[in-house]
Image (cartoon, rainbow, N blue to C red; front, side, top):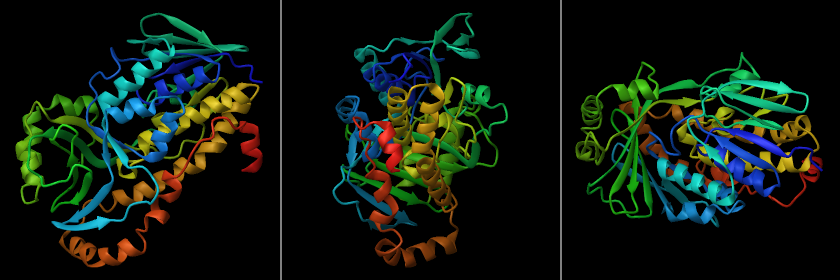
Length: 401
């Protein structure tokens, strides 16, 4: 039986509310502390939730609320220089769920609050004091909070990660900036289809939104790294001019860029990938979600992995007697999986800006690749078929691993 009765969860994005809701289900009092003024404050762009991520949400009762705000995607197309290649789907699995990030944050927040999780906003963590029997978080407004353990779900620029290990690596810039929008545009795309497009000068993706419009996202090559704040400090009209020039010769990339207004453009700044983090925990503090593993957006698994890890952490804290044992078990259950997916995504990033010869070779080889190396069972089977057995004791799972 666990000695852990309470937890402070730092961060109210995706992993934080999920971890807190799962902890509450496990009989552990959990409270969320978020630095921003609200659950979806200044957050934009869309993301895909894989079947494994939605299945983990089902364990805490959040699957259906998320499905209600999502657009199912059952068909995927790879477009290389305008040539379309239909990608085989993984049989027997539900479709991907495309969601707006802000709407997802709000939905997970609302579900956590409805389950009984207290959430406080404008609580920016500045320090932590550990005791023999607990941990105290100190916030920028002078307030404090104490519990048995502290969970860092505070994103890719995690403060908690630096407190656990001052020498921990930070996120690595992929050499691309992220942009997105949902627009009125005739892209000729069925409602259940997403297209991953290798344009002449840059990669982009697009698909039909639930309201009949088209969502699209751009990965713009950019030598200089810009944070979210820095990228948003530059007028949207400037970025639109660059995007329209970059995708001018692409169909429908050019039309999507021209249809986007400054008000619609979602600027997300530099795209990151987290290198392996050596120390996932120390004492009574532990990391979860993007704070410890954030594969590039090429993986299609970032949010789903964060959700999985949050649920698995709750199971470990439920079943193991003290923090060190619970955290060690959690890392053992998660590290190999998340680092393997991150490595796969890193390889994809290198192929996002092929030149004319590269695009020609991709089109020539794609029919063969679809039948061989792009076999969905080999590339996505173990990732998307992953399921968490909430009721199984963690001890038994570790013995059989």
